[in-house]
Image (cartoon, rainbow, N blue to C red):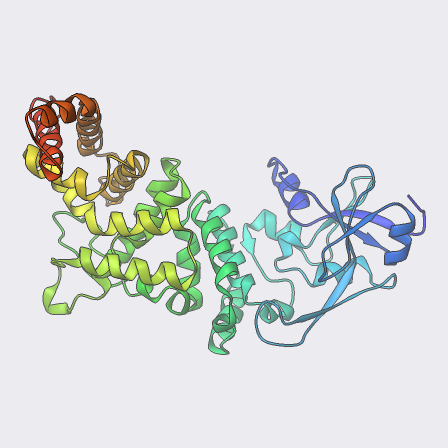
Amino acid sequence: MSLSFQTYLVGGAVRDRLLGLTVQDRDWVVVGASPQQLLDAGYQPVGNDFPVFLHPRTHEEVALARTERKTAAGYHGFAFHAAPDVTLEQDLARRDLTINAMAEAGDGTVIDPYGGRRDLADRVLRHVSPAFAEDPVRILRLARFAARFADFTVAPETVDLMRQMVAAGEVDALVAERVWQELSRGLMERQPSRMFQVLREAGALRVLLPEVDALFGVPQPEQHHPEIDTGIHLMMVLDQCAASGAPLTVRYACLCHDLGKGETRPEEWPRHIAHEVRSEKLARQVSARWKVPTDCRELAELVAREHTHVHQSGGFGPEARLRLLDRCDAWRRPERFAELLWACECDARGRLGLETRDYPQRAALLADLAAAQAVDLAAVSAAALASGARGPEIGRAVARARLGALSSGTGARKT
């Protein structure tokens, strides 16, 4: 490598190393070089927005030190300047949080011009400069970091700045793909409730997810929900998802499962009769707004519609349980049905003082499905054909055989 420029490890890799965490990705910045110098040194160019290259030996991405200037609203409204005269401090100044604005030289020296190490020690998420306000994605990123580093607080001045950004309409300019990217990553963090708490504190939740924001302050029956507040319940459910290692599909479904309770009128409180239909509609609405992937969208609608029935299934007879399996398309989509039950278990445990409660419905319904799947459909159909059955009559014969399997099953039915 030419001695005319220097390479630094920057961002999350430095932060995680100082926290004693495993470094997942490494980002590098080159200071004092021009694009041509990197090309001459064997670096391969990638990307179109700003000069990024692949290292000739490690093939890791290396970016030229750069500054940026706001040119329009939203995430894409920036002009970048990359040149040999851009300093490392200038490059770090454009980053979002102080804990992400540190660099490490080749000899291990940490360059920390904006107090990142202090904020790491104090467990504070703080913006580097007023330039934070130029990129609304940073609100989502900060909220995601709050979900990852759950014991960190957000600096009051950063909360104030985010509120100003929301008031200025910056959040309205966010594109669906970036919102979903950050929301989905935040849902997969250690304590996803923190993401939504931070978004709500900043005023961004009512812009991005008004259906979720509307749940806070809405009461529920205390005998089923000791935490009472629907919004608090939702946060507890999301953290149950994280504690159980649930996949993104289940976590997103849980996010949407009770949305209909935000549309019920005060005179309907605290029971929220038929909120499931409203929840399904609103889940579909949220998924369309943020272009949510099909697997997440479909499970969210299913959980919104059926979670109450799953909770009550311990008191169902074989016929009602068979209808539940039919409605959930459990025969063709057994994996999705299993995820439905996972989400319902998180819902049941996302309640104050009930976090470790038993949830026999999950095992019992999986046992029902296994018993019904064990029916020899080919033999049942052949017998029906031999007796002269045709078309729908064969389907009814299959249903009777499955019902027989559920009727003779030994799965626990009590809740």
